[in-house]
Length: 130
Length: 485
Image (cartoon, helix red, strand yellow):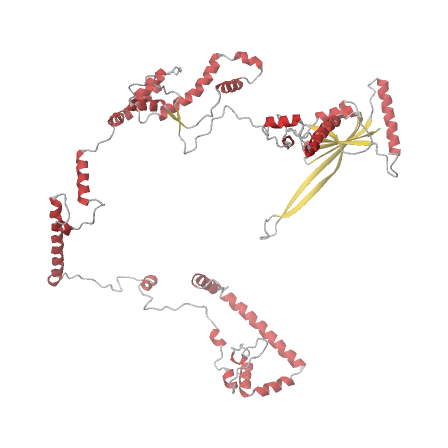
Protein backbone atom coordinates (compact mmCIF):
# COMPACT_ATOMS: atom_id res chain seq x y z
CA UNK A 1 0.00 0.00 0.00
CA UNK A 2 2.75 2.37 0.97
CA UNK A 3 4.67 1.49 -2.10
CA UNK A 4 1.65 2.10 -4.23
CA UNK A 5 1.23 5.50 -2.67
CA UNK A 6 4.82 6.42 -3.39
CA UNK A 7 4.46 5.28 -6.91
CA UNK A 8 1.28 7.19 -7.23
CA UNK A 9 3.06 10.33 -6.11
CA UNK A 10 5.85 9.74 -8.55
CA UNK A 11 3.37 9.23 -11.31
CA UNK A 12 1.60 12.41 -10.50
CA UNK A 13 4.87 14.25 -10.68
CA UNK A 14 5.60 12.73 -14.00
CA UNK A 15 2.20 13.68 -15.22
CA UNK A 16 2.86 17.21 -14.05
CA UNK A 17 6.14 17.32 -15.90
CA UNK A 18 4.55 16.20 -19.06
CA UNK A 19 1.81 18.75 -18.63
CA UNK A 20 4.41 21.51 -18.28
CA UNK A 21 6.15 20.36 -21.43
CA UNK A 22 2.90 20.40 -23.30
CA UNK A 23 3.02 16.76 -24.25
CA UNK A 24 -0.06 14.77 -25.04
CA UNK A 25 -2.09 14.02 -21.96
CA UNK A 26 -1.82 10.27 -21.71
CA UNK A 27 -2.92 7.85 -19.10
CA UNK A 28 0.24 6.59 -17.54
CA UNK A 29 0.52 3.13 -16.16
CA UNK A 30 3.11 1.07 -14.53
CA UNK A 31 4.01 -1.56 -17.02
CA UNK A 32 6.00 -4.64 -16.30
CA UNK A 33 7.31 -6.60 -19.24
CA UNK A 34 8.42 -10.13 -18.46
CA UNK A 35 10.50 -11.79 -21.08
CA UNK A 36 11.31 -15.47 -20.89
CA UNK A 37 13.11 -17.70 -23.30
CA UNK A 38 15.27 -20.76 -23.73
CA UNK A 39 17.71 -18.82 -25.79
CA UNK A 40 19.87 -16.26 -24.00
CA UNK A 41 21.13 -14.49 -27.06
CA UNK A 42 17.71 -13.74 -28.47
CA UNK A 43 16.45 -12.76 -25.08
CA UNK A 44 19.26 -10.33 -24.46
CA UNK A 45 18.75 -8.84 -27.87
CA UNK A 46 15.06 -8.28 -27.26
CA UNK A 47 15.79 -6.78 -23.86
CA UNK A 48 18.32 -4.40 -25.27
CA UNK A 49 15.95 -3.37 -28.04
CA UNK A 50 13.12 -2.74 -25.63
CA UNK A 51 15.23 -0.66 -23.30
CA UNK A 52 16.66 1.29 -26.19
CA UNK A 53 13.22 1.90 -27.61
CA UNK A 54 11.86 3.00 -24.27
CA UNK A 55 14.76 5.36 -23.64
CA UNK A 56 14.31 6.81 -27.07
CA UNK A 57 10.75 7.67 -26.13
CA UNK A 58 12.02 9.20 -22.95
CA UNK A 59 10.24 6.90 -20.58
CA UNK A 60 11.35 5.86 -17.17
CA UNK A 61 12.84 2.45 -17.53
CA UNK A 62 14.00 0.11 -14.85
CA UNK A 63 16.66 -1.88 -16.65
CA UNK A 64 16.43 -5.60 -17.36
CA UNK A 65 16.34 -7.41 -14.05
CA UNK A 66 17.72 -10.89 -14.45
CA UNK A 67 15.72 -13.43 -12.59
CA UNK A 68 17.75 -16.55 -11.72
CA UNK A 69 17.71 -19.10 -14.51
CA UNK A 70 15.51 -22.09 -13.95
CA UNK A 71 17.16 -25.30 -14.99
CA UNK A 72 14.97 -28.32 -15.49
CA UNK A 73 16.94 -31.56 -15.35
CA UNK A 74 15.91 -34.78 -16.97
CA UNK A 75 18.09 -37.75 -16.13
CA UNK A 76 17.33 -40.90 -18.07
CA UNK A 77 19.00 -44.17 -18.81
CA UNK A 78 20.69 -44.18 -22.14
CA UNK A 79 19.78 -47.76 -22.82
CA UNK A 80 16.38 -48.65 -24.29
CA UNK A 81 16.57 -51.98 -22.47
CA UNK A 82 17.99 -52.81 -19.11
CA UNK A 83 21.13 -54.42 -20.43
CA UNK A 84 24.60 -52.98 -20.27
CA UNK A 85 26.51 -50.59 -18.11
CA UNK A 86 24.18 -48.22 -16.38
CA UNK A 87 24.88 -45.04 -18.28
CA UNK A 88 22.70 -42.05 -17.76
CA UNK A 89 21.92 -39.05 -19.92
CA UNK A 90 21.62 -35.74 -18.16
CA UNK A 91 19.48 -33.36 -20.18
CA UNK A 92 18.73 -29.88 -19.06
CA UNK A 93 16.39 -27.19 -20.15
CA UNK A 94 17.23 -23.65 -19.20
CA UNK A 95 14.67 -20.90 -18.88
CA UNK A 96 15.95 -17.38 -18.71
CA UNK A 97 13.78 -14.57 -17.46
CA UNK A 98 14.15 -10.85 -17.62
CA UNK A 99 11.88 -8.16 -16.22
CA UNK A 100 11.67 -4.62 -17.48
CA UNK A 101 9.63 -1.98 -15.74
CA UNK A 102 8.34 1.05 -17.55
CA UNK A 103 6.09 3.93 -16.83
CA UNK A 104 4.20 4.91 -19.90
CA UNK A 105 0.92 4.62 -21.66
CA UNK A 106 -0.18 1.32 -23.11
CA UNK A 107 -0.12 2.53 -26.71
CA UNK A 108 3.55 3.38 -26.57
CA UNK A 109 4.36 0.04 -25.08
CA UNK A 110 2.39 -1.64 -27.81
CA UNK A 111 4.46 0.20 -30.38
CA UNK A 112 7.70 -0.79 -28.78
CA UNK A 113 6.82 -4.43 -28.40
CA UNK A 114 5.51 -4.66 -31.93
CA UNK A 115 8.86 -3.60 -33.34
CA UNK A 116 11.07 -6.03 -31.53
CA UNK A 117 9.67 -9.47 -32.10
CA UNK A 118 12.05 -12.35 -31.94
CA UNK A 119 10.95 -15.97 -32.28
CA UNK A 120 11.25 -18.06 -29.19
CA UNK A 121 10.91 -15.21 -26.71
CA UNK A 122 7.76 -15.14 -24.65
CA UNK A 123 6.49 -11.72 -23.74
CA UNK A 124 4.10 -10.96 -20.94
CA UNK A 125 2.94 -7.46 -20.20
CA UNK A 126 1.29 -6.46 -16.96
CA UNK A 127 -0.35 -3.08 -16.82
CA UNK A 128 -1.29 -1.50 -13.55
CA UNK A 129 -2.29 1.84 -12.25
CA UNK A 130 0.41 4.32 -11.60
CA UNK B 1 -12.40 -5.41 -5.62
CA UNK B 2 -14.49 -4.18 -2.80
CA UNK B 3 -16.43 -7.38 -2.68
CA UNK B 4 -13.52 -9.67 -1.92
CA UNK B 5 -12.49 -9.75 1.68
CA UNK B 6 -8.88 -9.82 2.74
CA UNK B 7 -7.38 -9.80 -0.72
CA UNK B 8 -5.34 -6.94 -2.06
CA UNK B 9 -7.04 -4.97 -4.77
CA UNK B 10 -5.83 -6.35 -8.05
CA UNK B 11 -5.55 -3.27 -10.18
CA UNK B 12 -3.66 -4.76 -13.05
CA UNK B 13 -4.15 -6.53 -16.30
CA UNK B 14 -1.79 -9.07 -17.78
CA UNK B 15 -1.37 -9.63 -21.47
CA UNK B 16 0.68 -12.21 -23.22
CA UNK B 17 1.93 -12.43 -26.76
CA UNK B 18 0.40 -15.37 -28.50
CA UNK B 19 0.87 -16.43 -32.10
CA UNK B 20 -2.27 -15.77 -34.05
CA UNK B 21 -4.39 -18.86 -34.49
CA UNK B 22 -4.12 -20.27 -37.99
CA UNK B 23 -1.17 -18.11 -38.93
CA UNK B 24 1.83 -19.58 -40.67
CA UNK B 25 4.24 -16.97 -39.44
CA UNK B 26 5.22 -17.61 -35.83
CA UNK B 27 6.28 -14.00 -35.48
CA UNK B 28 2.76 -12.81 -36.10
CA UNK B 29 1.69 -12.45 -32.51
CA UNK B 30 -1.01 -10.55 -30.71
CA UNK B 31 -1.61 -9.62 -27.13
CA UNK B 32 -4.15 -11.71 -25.34
CA UNK B 33 -5.44 -11.10 -21.86
CA UNK B 34 -4.59 -13.93 -19.53
CA UNK B 35 -6.09 -12.86 -16.22
CA UNK B 36 -9.61 -12.13 -15.15
CA UNK B 37 -9.32 -9.03 -13.05
CA UNK B 38 -11.79 -6.19 -13.27
CA UNK B 39 -9.15 -3.77 -14.35
CA UNK B 40 -9.61 -2.61 -17.89
CA UNK B 41 -7.02 -1.31 -20.24
CA UNK B 42 -8.55 0.24 -23.27
CA UNK B 43 -5.18 0.89 -24.93
CA UNK B 44 -4.32 -2.67 -25.82
CA UNK B 45 -6.58 -3.01 -28.79
CA UNK B 46 -5.29 -6.32 -30.09
CA UNK B 47 -7.24 -8.47 -27.84
CA UNK B 48 -10.56 -6.86 -28.56
CA UNK B 49 -10.58 -7.62 -32.23
CA UNK B 50 -8.87 -10.88 -31.66
CA UNK B 51 -11.43 -11.85 -29.13
CA UNK B 52 -14.30 -11.01 -31.37
CA UNK B 53 -12.87 -13.10 -34.18
CA UNK B 54 -12.06 -15.85 -31.83
CA UNK B 55 -15.51 -15.84 -30.34
CA UNK B 56 -17.08 -15.74 -33.78
CA UNK B 57 -15.24 -18.90 -34.75
CA UNK B 58 -16.02 -20.43 -31.43
CA UNK B 59 -19.63 -19.60 -32.01
CA UNK B 60 -19.41 -21.29 -35.37
CA UNK B 61 -17.99 -24.38 -33.82
CA UNK B 62 -20.55 -24.45 -31.10
CA UNK B 63 -23.30 -24.01 -33.59
CA UNK B 64 -21.89 -26.70 -35.82
CA UNK B 65 -22.20 -29.15 -33.04
CA UNK B 66 -25.89 -28.51 -32.85
CA UNK B 67 -26.91 -27.57 -36.40
CA UNK B 68 -25.52 -27.13 -39.90
CA UNK B 69 -22.56 -24.90 -40.58
CA UNK B 70 -23.18 -21.33 -41.64
CA UNK B 71 -23.36 -20.76 -45.37
CA UNK B 72 -20.12 -18.90 -45.84
CA UNK B 73 -18.24 -21.59 -44.03
CA UNK B 74 -19.83 -24.28 -46.11
CA UNK B 75 -19.03 -22.48 -49.32
CA UNK B 76 -15.43 -22.12 -48.35
CA UNK B 77 -15.14 -25.75 -47.45
CA UNK B 78 -16.60 -26.76 -50.78
CA UNK B 79 -14.31 -24.44 -52.67
CA UNK B 80 -11.28 -26.04 -51.10
CA UNK B 81 -12.45 -29.43 -52.24
CA UNK B 82 -13.51 -30.91 -48.97
CA UNK B 83 -16.77 -32.83 -48.76
CA UNK B 84 -19.82 -31.12 -47.41
CA UNK B 85 -20.54 -33.47 -44.58
CA UNK B 86 -21.19 -31.01 -41.78
CA UNK B 87 -17.68 -31.07 -40.40
CA UNK B 88 -15.79 -27.82 -40.23
CA UNK B 89 -12.57 -28.67 -42.08
CA UNK B 90 -11.45 -25.08 -41.87
CA UNK B 91 -10.56 -25.73 -38.30
CA UNK B 92 -7.61 -27.75 -39.48
CA UNK B 93 -6.36 -25.33 -42.06
CA UNK B 94 -4.01 -22.51 -41.54
CA UNK B 95 -3.10 -19.51 -43.66
CA UNK B 96 -0.12 -19.71 -45.89
CA UNK B 97 1.87 -16.56 -45.54
CA UNK B 98 5.28 -15.81 -46.95
CA UNK B 99 7.43 -16.48 -43.96
CA UNK B 100 10.60 -14.53 -43.35
CA UNK B 101 12.83 -17.56 -43.45
CA UNK B 102 10.74 -19.27 -46.12
CA UNK B 103 11.22 -22.53 -44.37
CA UNK B 104 7.69 -23.69 -44.81
CA UNK B 105 7.11 -22.62 -48.39
CA UNK B 106 8.43 -24.48 -51.36
CA UNK B 107 9.16 -22.76 -54.62
CA UNK B 108 10.42 -25.10 -57.32
CA UNK B 109 13.43 -23.61 -59.03
CA UNK B 110 13.11 -23.13 -62.74
CA UNK B 111 16.85 -23.12 -63.35
CA UNK B 112 17.46 -26.51 -61.82
CA UNK B 113 18.07 -29.44 -64.12
CA UNK B 114 15.26 -31.95 -64.18
CA UNK B 115 15.71 -35.33 -62.55
CA UNK B 116 17.52 -38.05 -64.41
CA UNK B 117 15.36 -40.87 -65.74
CA UNK B 118 14.86 -44.02 -63.72
CA UNK B 119 16.80 -46.98 -65.03
CA UNK B 120 13.88 -48.87 -66.49
CA UNK B 121 12.58 -46.00 -68.57
CA UNK B 122 13.93 -44.73 -71.86
CA UNK B 123 12.85 -41.43 -73.25
CA UNK B 124 13.20 -40.10 -76.77
CA UNK B 125 12.77 -36.62 -78.03
CA UNK B 126 10.71 -36.90 -81.16
CA UNK B 127 9.92 -33.22 -81.56
CA UNK B 128 11.82 -32.98 -84.84
CA UNK B 129 10.21 -35.86 -86.59
CA UNK B 130 8.30 -34.67 -89.60
CA UNK B 131 5.43 -36.80 -90.62
CA UNK B 132 5.38 -37.08 -94.37
CA UNK B 133 2.28 -35.39 -95.76
CA UNK B 134 1.93 -37.91 -98.58
CA UNK B 135 0.85 -41.34 -97.51
CA UNK B 136 2.18 -43.10 -100.62
CA UNK B 137 5.59 -44.71 -101.00
CA UNK B 138 5.80 -45.57 -97.37
CA UNK B 139 9.02 -47.44 -97.47
CA UNK B 140 9.18 -48.82 -94.00
CA UNK B 141 12.88 -48.99 -93.88
CA UNK B 142 13.35 -45.39 -94.97
CA UNK B 143 10.76 -43.96 -92.63
CA UNK B 144 12.19 -45.93 -89.80
CA UNK B 145 15.62 -44.57 -90.57
CA UNK B 146 14.36 -41.07 -90.79
CA UNK B 147 12.44 -41.29 -87.55
CA UNK B 148 15.35 -42.89 -85.81
CA UNK B 149 17.69 -40.25 -87.13
CA UNK B 150 15.58 -37.43 -85.88
CA UNK B 151 14.74 -38.78 -82.48
CA UNK B 152 17.30 -38.41 -79.80
CA UNK B 153 17.40 -40.40 -76.62
CA UNK B 154 17.19 -38.22 -73.60
CA UNK B 155 18.76 -38.65 -70.24
CA UNK B 156 16.50 -36.24 -68.46
CA UNK B 157 12.91 -35.41 -69.03
CA UNK B 158 11.47 -32.02 -68.36
CA UNK B 159 8.03 -31.88 -66.95
CA UNK B 160 5.39 -30.91 -69.44
CA UNK B 161 4.79 -27.26 -68.86
CA UNK B 162 2.40 -24.91 -70.49
CA UNK B 163 4.42 -22.78 -72.91
CA UNK B 164 2.90 -19.61 -71.52
CA UNK B 165 3.84 -20.57 -68.02
CA UNK B 166 7.31 -21.52 -69.15
CA UNK B 167 7.68 -18.20 -70.88
CA UNK B 168 6.52 -16.33 -67.83
CA UNK B 169 8.87 -18.26 -65.63
CA UNK B 170 11.78 -17.56 -67.89
CA UNK B 171 10.96 -13.91 -67.90
CA UNK B 172 10.77 -13.79 -64.15
CA UNK B 173 14.27 -15.22 -64.04
CA UNK B 174 15.69 -12.36 -66.00
CA UNK B 175 14.02 -9.54 -64.19
CA UNK B 176 15.45 -9.65 -60.75
CA UNK B 177 15.48 -5.96 -60.00
CA UNK B 178 12.48 -3.71 -60.32
CA UNK B 179 10.27 -2.89 -63.20
CA UNK B 180 12.94 -0.62 -64.67
CA UNK B 181 14.96 -3.50 -65.92
CA UNK B 182 12.13 -4.99 -67.88
CA UNK B 183 12.60 -2.37 -70.53
CA UNK B 184 16.23 -3.35 -70.89
CA UNK B 185 15.44 -6.85 -72.01
CA UNK B 186 16.74 -7.00 -75.52
CA UNK B 187 15.98 -9.68 -78.00
CA UNK B 188 19.51 -10.92 -78.12
CA UNK B 189 19.51 -11.54 -74.40
CA UNK B 190 16.41 -13.66 -74.59
CA UNK B 191 17.54 -15.50 -77.68
CA UNK B 192 20.93 -16.19 -76.23
CA UNK B 193 19.36 -17.68 -73.14
CA UNK B 194 17.01 -19.77 -75.19
CA UNK B 195 19.75 -20.94 -77.51
CA UNK B 196 21.77 -22.12 -74.54
CA UNK B 197 18.98 -24.41 -73.51
CA UNK B 198 18.68 -25.87 -76.98
CA UNK B 199 22.38 -26.36 -77.35
CA UNK B 200 22.32 -28.95 -74.62
CA UNK B 201 19.77 -31.03 -76.45
CA UNK B 202 21.69 -30.71 -79.70
CA UNK B 203 24.90 -31.91 -78.16
CA UNK B 204 23.22 -34.96 -76.78
CA UNK B 205 21.85 -35.61 -80.20
CA UNK B 206 25.33 -35.61 -81.68
CA UNK B 207 26.84 -37.85 -79.10
CA UNK B 208 24.20 -40.48 -78.90
CA UNK B 209 22.44 -40.51 -82.20
CA UNK B 210 25.51 -41.70 -84.05
CA UNK B 211 26.08 -45.40 -83.79
CA UNK B 212 23.93 -47.02 -86.36
CA UNK B 213 22.82 -44.37 -88.76
CA UNK B 214 25.17 -42.53 -90.99
CA UNK B 215 26.45 -39.12 -90.24
CA UNK B 216 25.54 -37.81 -93.60
CA UNK B 217 21.91 -37.80 -92.68
CA UNK B 218 22.54 -35.93 -89.48
CA UNK B 219 24.56 -33.31 -91.22
CA UNK B 220 21.74 -32.62 -93.57
CA UNK B 221 19.33 -32.47 -90.71
CA UNK B 222 21.33 -29.83 -88.96
CA UNK B 223 21.31 -27.66 -92.00
CA UNK B 224 17.58 -27.97 -92.15
CA UNK B 225 17.15 -26.56 -88.66
CA UNK B 226 16.33 -22.89 -88.36
CA UNK B 227 18.55 -22.56 -85.30
CA UNK B 228 21.54 -20.37 -85.88
CA UNK B 229 24.29 -22.73 -84.78
CA UNK B 230 27.58 -21.98 -86.45
CA UNK B 231 29.55 -24.98 -87.62
CA UNK B 232 32.92 -24.78 -86.08
CA UNK B 233 36.12 -26.34 -87.33
CA UNK B 234 35.78 -28.84 -84.53
CA UNK B 235 32.47 -30.04 -85.87
CA UNK B 236 33.95 -30.68 -89.29
CA UNK B 237 36.83 -32.59 -87.85
CA UNK B 238 34.54 -34.60 -85.66
CA UNK B 239 32.33 -35.56 -88.53
CA UNK B 240 35.27 -36.65 -90.65
CA UNK B 241 36.61 -38.74 -87.82
CA UNK B 242 33.25 -40.30 -87.21
CA UNK B 243 32.93 -41.16 -90.88
CA UNK B 244 36.31 -42.81 -90.83
CA UNK B 245 35.56 -44.81 -87.77
CA UNK B 246 32.07 -45.83 -88.56
CA UNK B 247 32.03 -45.41 -92.30
CA UNK B 248 32.84 -49.04 -93.15
CA UNK B 249 30.51 -50.57 -90.68
CA UNK B 250 27.91 -48.17 -91.90
CA UNK B 251 27.94 -49.74 -95.35
CA UNK B 252 27.61 -53.22 -93.99
CA UNK B 253 24.85 -52.32 -91.69
CA UNK B 254 23.06 -50.48 -94.40
CA UNK B 255 23.20 -53.46 -96.61
CA UNK B 256 22.03 -55.65 -93.83
CA UNK B 257 19.32 -53.26 -92.97
CA UNK B 258 18.01 -53.17 -96.49
CA UNK B 259 18.19 -56.87 -97.32
CA UNK B 260 16.35 -58.02 -94.30
CA UNK B 261 17.60 -61.40 -93.10
CA UNK B 262 21.23 -61.94 -92.79
CA UNK B 263 22.34 -65.05 -94.68
CA UNK B 264 25.04 -67.32 -93.37
CA UNK B 265 27.74 -68.40 -95.81
CA UNK B 266 26.92 -71.55 -97.72
CA UNK B 267 29.55 -73.73 -96.08
CA UNK B 268 28.20 -73.06 -92.63
CA UNK B 269 24.74 -73.99 -93.70
CA UNK B 270 25.90 -77.25 -95.16
CA UNK B 271 27.76 -78.14 -92.00
CA UNK B 272 24.77 -77.42 -89.87
CA UNK B 273 22.57 -79.58 -92.03
CA UNK B 274 25.00 -82.43 -91.80
CA UNK B 275 25.19 -82.03 -88.04
CA UNK B 276 21.47 -82.08 -87.71
CA UNK B 277 21.07 -85.16 -89.82
CA UNK B 278 23.80 -87.02 -88.05
CA UNK B 279 22.45 -86.44 -84.65
CA UNK B 280 18.89 -87.16 -85.55
CA UNK B 281 15.72 -85.63 -84.33
CA UNK B 282 14.73 -85.56 -80.72
CA UNK B 283 11.19 -86.56 -81.44
CA UNK B 284 11.96 -89.95 -82.87
CA UNK B 285 12.68 -93.06 -80.97
CA UNK B 286 16.03 -93.84 -79.67
CA UNK B 287 18.21 -95.36 -82.33
CA UNK B 288 21.10 -97.68 -81.88
CA UNK B 289 23.73 -98.56 -84.45
CA UNK B 290 22.36 -102.08 -84.59
CA UNK B 291 19.09 -100.70 -85.84
CA UNK B 292 20.86 -99.21 -88.80
CA UNK B 293 22.65 -102.37 -89.59
CA UNK B 294 19.59 -104.51 -89.43
CA UNK B 295 17.70 -101.93 -91.34
CA UNK B 296 14.84 -101.66 -88.85
CA UNK B 297 14.78 -97.96 -88.93
CA UNK B 298 15.06 -95.52 -91.75
CA UNK B 299 18.32 -93.85 -92.40
CA UNK B 300 18.74 -90.85 -94.55
CA UNK B 301 22.22 -91.48 -95.78
CA UNK B 302 24.03 -94.62 -96.66
CA UNK B 303 27.02 -93.33 -94.80
CA UNK B 304 25.23 -93.67 -91.55
CA UNK B 305 24.58 -97.35 -92.00
CA UNK B 306 28.16 -98.02 -92.86
CA UNK B 307 29.36 -96.07 -89.91
CA UNK B 308 27.12 -97.91 -87.52
CA UNK B 309 28.37 -101.21 -88.78
CA UNK B 310 31.88 -99.95 -88.42
CA UNK B 311 31.27 -98.95 -84.86
CA UNK B 312 30.16 -102.39 -83.85
CA UNK B 313 33.06 -104.02 -85.59
CA UNK B 314 35.52 -101.68 -84.02
CA UNK B 315 34.16 -102.36 -80.59
CA UNK B 316 34.55 -106.06 -81.07
CA UNK B 317 38.11 -105.62 -82.27
CA UNK B 318 39.12 -103.57 -79.30
CA UNK B 319 37.61 -106.03 -76.89
CA UNK B 320 39.54 -108.90 -78.44
CA UNK B 321 42.73 -106.97 -78.33
CA UNK B 322 42.46 -106.18 -74.68
CA UNK B 323 41.51 -109.68 -73.73
CA UNK B 324 44.46 -111.25 -75.42
CA UNK B 325 46.96 -108.69 -74.53
CA UNK B 326 48.18 -109.16 -70.97
CA UNK B 327 49.30 -112.77 -71.31
CA UNK B 328 52.10 -112.06 -73.72
CA UNK B 329 53.34 -108.61 -73.18
CA UNK B 330 54.00 -107.47 -69.76
CA UNK B 331 55.70 -104.27 -69.12
CA UNK B 332 57.85 -104.33 -66.13
CA UNK B 333 57.32 -101.23 -64.18
CA UNK B 334 59.94 -100.48 -61.61
CA UNK B 335 58.69 -98.73 -58.55
CA UNK B 336 61.42 -97.54 -56.23
CA UNK B 337 60.73 -97.83 -52.57
CA UNK B 338 61.34 -94.79 -50.58
CA UNK B 339 64.31 -94.96 -48.30
CA UNK B 340 64.50 -93.17 -45.02
CA UNK B 341 67.44 -91.06 -45.96
CA UNK B 342 66.13 -89.53 -49.12
CA UNK B 343 62.71 -88.67 -47.88
CA UNK B 344 62.08 -86.78 -44.73
CA UNK B 345 58.72 -87.14 -43.10
CA UNK B 346 57.46 -84.83 -40.46
CA UNK B 347 55.01 -85.79 -37.77
CA UNK B 348 51.96 -84.47 -39.44
CA UNK B 349 52.60 -86.12 -42.75
CA UNK B 350 53.47 -89.47 -41.30
CA UNK B 351 50.46 -89.40 -39.08
CA UNK B 352 48.26 -88.53 -42.00
CA UNK B 353 49.34 -91.73 -43.69
CA UNK B 354 47.93 -93.75 -40.82
CA UNK B 355 44.33 -94.65 -40.86
CA UNK B 356 42.05 -94.44 -37.91
CA UNK B 357 40.80 -97.90 -38.66
CA UNK B 358 44.07 -99.36 -37.55
CA UNK B 359 45.21 -96.73 -35.18
CA UNK B 360 43.38 -95.49 -32.17
CA UNK B 361 45.32 -92.55 -30.90
CA UNK B 362 44.73 -91.62 -27.35
CA UNK B 363 43.34 -88.31 -26.24
CA UNK B 364 45.49 -86.02 -24.22
CA UNK B 365 43.58 -85.20 -21.11
CA UNK B 366 44.20 -83.07 -18.08
CA UNK B 367 46.19 -84.96 -15.53
CA UNK B 368 43.32 -86.34 -13.54
CA UNK B 369 43.46 -87.20 -9.90
CA UNK B 370 40.34 -89.20 -10.17
CA UNK B 371 42.00 -92.54 -9.63
CA UNK B 372 42.96 -91.73 -6.14
CA UNK B 373 39.50 -90.68 -5.26
CA UNK B 374 38.16 -94.14 -5.21
CA UNK B 375 39.51 -96.17 -2.34
CA UNK B 376 41.24 -99.36 -3.28
CA UNK B 377 39.43 -101.22 -0.64
CA UNK B 378 35.83 -100.44 -0.31
CA UNK B 379 35.18 -100.22 3.36
CA UNK B 380 31.59 -100.99 2.75
CA UNK B 381 32.33 -104.42 1.45
CA UNK B 382 34.03 -105.56 4.57
CA UNK B 383 31.68 -103.85 6.96
CA UNK B 384 28.40 -105.14 5.75
CA UNK B 385 27.70 -108.60 6.77
CA UNK B 386 24.03 -108.38 6.03
CA UNK B 387 23.13 -107.46 2.50
CA UNK B 388 22.01 -104.01 3.40
CA UNK B 389 23.46 -100.82 2.06
CA UNK B 390 23.07 -98.19 4.71
CA UNK B 391 22.23 -94.64 3.74
CA UNK B 392 23.52 -91.90 5.97
CA UNK B 393 23.19 -88.23 6.20
CA UNK B 394 20.66 -85.78 4.97
CA UNK B 395 21.05 -86.78 1.35
CA UNK B 396 20.71 -90.45 2.14
CA UNK B 397 23.89 -91.56 0.47
CA UNK B 398 25.54 -94.95 0.75
CA UNK B 399 28.39 -93.49 2.70
CA UNK B 400 30.37 -96.68 2.92
CA UNK B 401 30.73 -96.98 -0.80
CA UNK B 402 31.53 -93.39 -1.61
CA UNK B 403 35.05 -92.20 -2.32
CA UNK B 404 36.39 -90.66 0.81
CA UNK B 405 38.07 -87.33 0.98
CA UNK B 406 41.76 -87.52 1.41
CA UNK B 407 42.28 -86.63 5.00
CA UNK B 408 45.48 -86.99 6.97
CA UNK B 409 47.05 -90.34 6.47
CA UNK B 410 46.47 -91.31 10.07
CA UNK B 411 42.84 -90.53 10.15
CA UNK B 412 42.16 -92.46 7.04
CA UNK B 413 43.82 -95.49 8.38
CA UNK B 414 42.04 -95.05 11.62
CA UNK B 415 38.67 -94.73 10.03
CA UNK B 416 39.13 -97.68 7.79
CA UNK B 417 40.06 -100.18 10.42
CA UNK B 418 37.58 -98.68 12.85
CA UNK B 419 34.75 -99.15 10.44
CA UNK B 420 36.03 -102.46 9.48
CA UNK B 421 35.92 -103.64 13.08
CA UNK B 422 32.58 -102.77 14.46
CA UNK B 423 29.74 -100.41 13.76
CA UNK B 424 28.66 -100.47 17.36
CA UNK B 425 31.94 -99.24 18.74
CA UNK B 426 31.64 -96.12 16.59
CA UNK B 427 28.32 -95.37 18.16
CA UNK B 428 29.68 -95.63 21.64
CA UNK B 429 32.47 -93.28 20.88
CA UNK B 430 30.08 -90.75 19.47
CA UNK B 431 28.18 -90.60 22.78
CA UNK B 432 31.29 -89.88 24.77
CA UNK B 433 32.16 -86.91 22.71
CA UNK B 434 31.77 -83.72 24.71
CA UNK B 435 30.91 -80.29 23.42
CA UNK B 436 34.49 -79.20 23.20
CA UNK B 437 35.53 -82.27 21.33
CA UNK B 438 32.67 -81.77 18.97
CA UNK B 439 33.70 -78.17 18.48
CA UNK B 440 37.27 -79.22 17.90
CA UNK B 441 36.23 -81.83 15.45
CA UNK B 442 34.05 -79.44 13.56
CA UNK B 443 36.78 -76.84 13.52
CA UNK B 444 39.19 -79.37 12.17
CA UNK B 445 36.76 -80.27 9.45
CA UNK B 446 36.34 -76.65 8.60
CA UNK B 447 40.05 -76.17 8.41
CA UNK B 448 40.37 -79.16 6.17
CA UNK B 449 37.74 -77.85 3.84
CA UNK B 450 39.47 -74.51 3.71
CA UNK B 451 42.74 -76.11 2.82
CA UNK B 452 41.04 -78.26 0.22
CA UNK B 453 39.49 -75.21 -1.34
CA UNK B 454 42.81 -73.47 -1.46
CA UNK B 455 44.49 -76.41 -3.05
CA UNK B 456 41.76 -76.74 -5.62
CA UNK B 457 42.04 -73.12 -6.58
CA UNK B 458 45.77 -73.41 -6.93
CA UNK B 459 45.46 -76.43 -9.08
CA UNK B 460 42.84 -74.79 -11.20
CA UNK B 461 45.11 -71.84 -11.78
CA UNK B 462 47.99 -74.07 -12.73
CA UNK B 463 46.04 -75.95 -15.30
CA UNK B 464 44.04 -73.04 -16.69
CA UNK B 465 45.68 -73.26 -20.07
CA UNK B 466 44.92 -76.94 -20.26
CA UNK B 467 41.30 -76.34 -19.44
CA UNK B 468 41.11 -73.72 -22.13
CA UNK B 469 42.36 -76.16 -24.70
CA UNK B 470 40.04 -78.81 -23.43
CA UNK B 471 37.15 -76.38 -23.58
CA UNK B 472 37.99 -75.66 -27.19
CA UNK B 473 37.89 -79.30 -28.06
CA UNK B 474 34.77 -79.90 -26.03
CA UNK B 475 33.06 -77.00 -27.72
CA UNK B 476 33.51 -78.65 -31.08
CA UNK B 477 33.05 -82.28 -30.23
CA UNK B 478 31.10 -82.51 -27.04
CA UNK B 479 27.57 -81.51 -26.22
CA UNK B 480 26.98 -77.83 -25.70
CA UNK B 481 26.30 -78.17 -22.01
CA UNK B 482 29.89 -79.02 -21.15
CA UNK B 483 31.60 -76.20 -19.40
CA UNK B 484 35.10 -76.88 -18.26
CA UNK B 485 36.03 -73.35 -17.33
